[in-house]
Image (tube, rainbow, N blue to C red; front, top):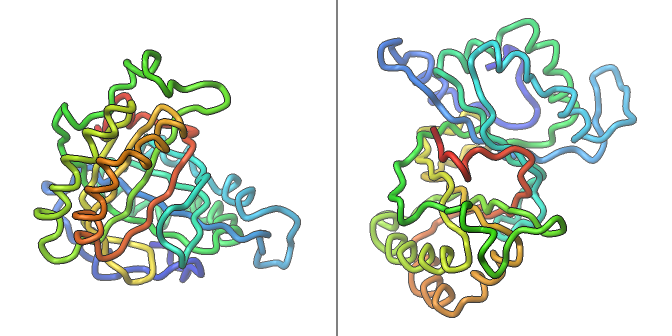
Length: 270
């Protein structure tokens, strides 16, 4: 990570060392899922102000550096509603796919990256940066955007697609027990209304956060907010949630995001 200690989270040095010591022949792509909370007003080291934290983060966005590294941004969007998790109110979710862990670590010490980093330091109040690996999804769970035009709650200009992002920590045994029971019901209901899994990741470590460890991050796509609300209110899903989902989860954040960029829905996590 950057040689300067960031103010917007705590670095997990154990995970950082695991990344740093990964042999080149065993290294490979890593998806960094970013949960971002901005300051209301950016505060620079020289005392200058006048722009929002989000505007400062827009100045930070190291797009050219990522392209040079061979990294991609498959998902990026603004949080419009937070349904679970009260200690941090998230503003944006973004995912960067790096070709290797070494590429991610090497970026932290580049001069051009460090020059941009002042904007992130000025604008970011808190962030999670979570290293992930994709789960292969059965076709029956995948979202089918090619069918969206023909469903009841089709996307419109006023109410376009949304992504529901779940960050999850399971109780012991919860992933294989109650969560699988809930999932079998929930995805059936979601697909009835046009929704489905766009990408699911297992967490290998959290490089920046507050010390908590996570198990999984899910990106569930819906054609519209109306579609999502139809799922929320579906009696079959409500029954499964009460019987299984609550029992499976030890900790979670759930946010609804309006994507600005999204290849997960059409291509999955590749």
